[in-house]
Length: 320
Image 1 (spheres, rainbow, N blue to C red):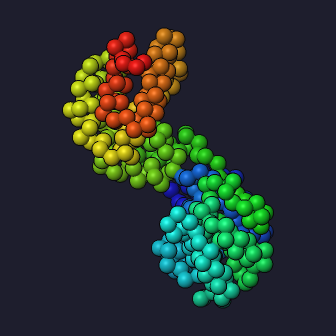
Image 2 (spheres, one colour):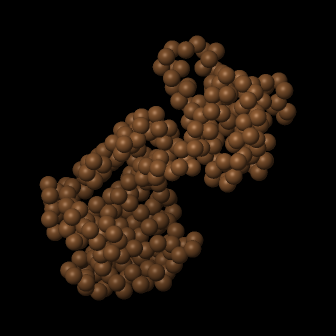
Image 3 (tube, rainbow, N blue to C red):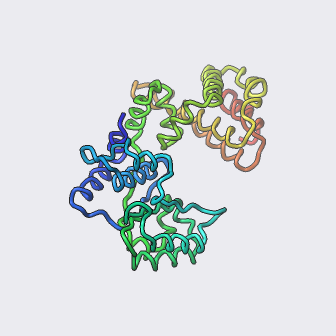
């Protein structure tokens, strides 16, 4: 799938809006891309930058082959600069340096583009320094600010930018895009339940550890659904050896929730009995409770073992 096709599917309204901006020569001097992680902000920032610098526009889209497109794709274009947090914040000195670069002519043209990542992490001093520049821009420049927390961006900065709101990806659309990447439908459906980021989903799907983890949790799910106490033994025998780190343990819960939510959807669409639906819904609640206990620093193994007992023999569960 071509880059522009993917962008058009991810955020059709924004894609159309930006295309019209170029058609009518109304490209803003500053944009604020606002939306959750994985909704396409970075991809659109790259497309917009290439659209500005591309030497061979094809049907309103950058060619992705000219020297400018190639260097932008490789983060090597001299007139495209990035500002990223240093530690926990973007510091005032970084914005001052940015303003110095703004005042210079481009290395190859008069045009410059600056991309500020995680713009909500600007310190008060940095934000105020950027605001002064946005009020009185110098030269032929375009600034792109990316944020997942628009409420942390100064209203005065927001007012100086064209704000573009990135909507969460529709799950069916996400599955379709993943299938276009060569991922099977079952795996694509599972990935769409785990993350809203197409890039991250594709990356996860190619990770050997994830594919092993997915199979392990699927086996655990099967034991639980059969009320097989092998599910209890399986925690110690297999799972604790694979899910060692915090993020891995979190993924285990996310995977189990995804399998149960898929089951619930199947039961609803299949017209299953209220008893079956209630049983599955109660098991989702058990998983969420287990997750909360684990977040409160209860041993992951203990939490998983208690989860098994609460599902298969709830009367034996200690502490409800």
